[in-house]
Length: 116
Image (cartoon, rainbow, N blue to C red; front, side, top):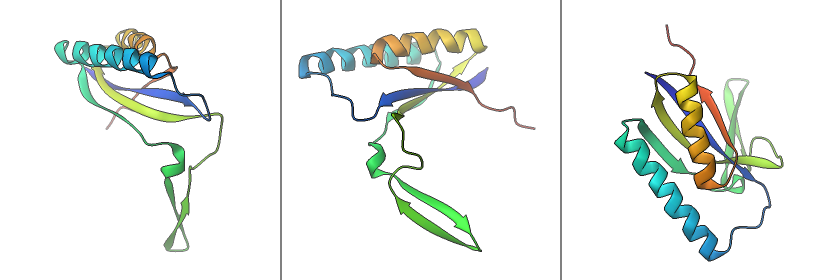
């Protein structure tokens, strides 16, 4: 089994869903999470604070410098992530489709690089 990262792509400055729509999304995300766990595919998942809460730490000249705010400003940002186990890319993409339907957001699916 290989590990895959399902990244939830959140639109920057978007209008949040209405409370009833958000409640439905959260129920769908819980059902997705439950399905991942039942299948033995779940490793870790969590939502992230918005990019305005980020701090970037950059090395240079033997020291580090910190900058408040996101690493890169853009129209989208990483809103959450899910680390899963899957037999292959096709299985990971199937989980990614389910995640997209549950969250109503784009999902980026990436495998972890093979370790020596």
